[in-house]
Amino acid sequence: MNILVTGAAGFIGYHLSKHMLTLGYHVIGVDNLNEYYNVRLKLDRVKLLETNTDFEFHKIDLTNREKVNEIFKTKNIKIVVNLAAQAGVRYSLENPHSYIDSNLVGFMNILEACRHYSVEHLIYASSSSVYGANRNIPFSSNDSVDHPVSLYAATKKANELMAHTYSHLFNIPTTGLRFFTVYGPWGRPDMAYYSFTKNIIEEKTIKVFNNGEMRRDFTYIDDIVNGIILLLDHPPKYNEHWDRQNPIPSSSYAPYKIYNIGNNQPVKLMDFIHTLENLTGKKAKIEFAPMQPGDVKETYADISDLQTDVGFYPQTSIDKGLSEFVDWYREYNK
Image 1 (cartoon, rainbow, N blue to C red):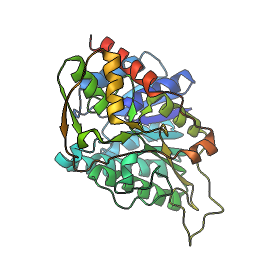
Image 2 (image 1 turned 90 degrees about the vertical axis):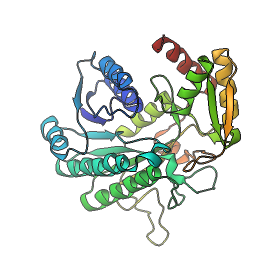
Image 3 (image 1 turned 90 degrees about the horizontal axis):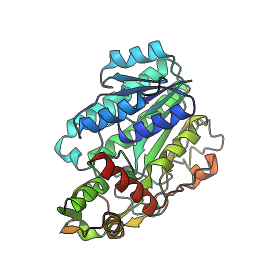
Image 4 (image 1 turned 120 degrees about the vertical axis):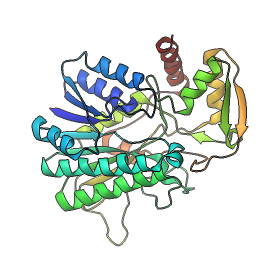
């Protein structure tokens, strides 16, 4: 089966493509290789994927409608996993237009292609950031997410609304995944765990926001990939019990579903840093700072519906996951 993975040179896209290849899928990877972070890291991921003859890579920006359509027209794609997006909460304060281009225009082109080329299942990346000002803990996919606190979050909420519209109008099964702080080998250098590790090893200062009073539902990359794999052959169906007078946000009368995908075990940021100190054998030099605009104090995923529907249970502890990351970091960066 031909599966399209957008953002294939990215962190999650690389790991997902790699695992799909071991399962016998033919993976068509698309990425624009932008310079949001070190392009060499993206090229190294692609290079490893291309050692498998069932992987083919195309450098395409999703805002290019013609090139997106050409891929769908020529490759007989049955399933799409859309991971391409402009990521980063804080960067959305600096360069908002890139989020509109990638996350809205690019996603629109994917939806239109899925419509015209009879795609059987679209899985796409949303984010835990959509919970914004929500204070119900743990975050449930049935909570309201109408109060985002960053443009990044707003674009991800918009993706969910756009997907529902296409599920309703054109019967395209769409599954949105709200990722919770994904980490692991080959990770993104803009993420805190990566920069913390780099600076601790190099004995440089790390900046810790909200004076360290933060908790994150850190989710190891292998657990994320396993969750996506479980969902590939489970496209959402019409919910016969969906009540229009008391609508459930995560489901619909249309073939549409939203899931949280996280570790379900939030970790205190300072405990996370202490674990990195133990693994690197060095003491962190910490500069405490106030809360950043657009940030949230805590993330915590309720994953009960994903457990019920496909048997998703994260397996990786924070100690094991960070150990794997630090080992990779030392090896990759010599």
